[in-house]
Length: 383
Image (cartoon, rainbow, N blue to C red; front, top):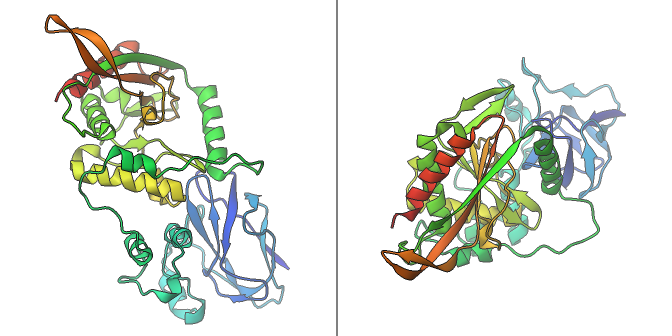
């Protein structure tokens, strides 16, 4: 029996959880056919077959976690297997392998064995909503999230304003169990341990007067805009620090911390300044919904240059947000509250937004962090 082991799925991820087998013992498969969908700490990933042959043994059941290099699937030893052509740079398996010979392989494989036309994230969403993809026909070459949601009678929201309450309602409280940690929680543990070992954190706190905001203003939207504005003045906060070198990044890609039943997810809104308010609001809603379903695409979990945690939507005023290397800064926003303050010569009740900003003191000076906070506050106090 030929043993195919769980390959390196990219970025040094140590393990993966079996989410859906696409084949069964006894099935015949062709090279590059999808064998299994696994969940890593970052996303759902399809693992293709390295060669054609007959499946003899599946080494793990759905829901089990395997470490990289452990046996995944066994093929019958008949001497007739045809190996899949390897690209010049074998690299790591991240999703479906794309190579110059794939078009030919795709034409040669039987139609009955072709993988279903949907990404792992879309298939996971279909299972979540009870949609049978075999009864649907995609408009393009693959099913989209919109098509699945429409089939389930749960269309994505339009680009209009999304209320904070509606966004908050998408996340349900997690129920504590004695089962092993989900991939997202294991990734959180690894990231926090790495931060503890590498980062020299400094946290600066302040409160911003937001009394003049128009009624119904979305706090997360304003924070995204404020971070992009402040980063333009203090680019060293929108940066990566690797090999003792500080590298300011452009544009501003903000990783938005999202609490979900499976753990913490940080989807990335890329080039914030280039998007309209409507686009940003739609992205905020979409990411929160996808996080609750565990269906955030891997491409949306990469490329952050600075982080935002709007923890005040859940509770608490101040915190010590954790910087995750190679990033050097994270902005935390607490729960707004009212206080009596002097305003235009009189005692007035004003609405305040607490801010807690942590930076990596290996790369950022205290002055740079203070100036960044000042620019952030100035932008947030505007109507």
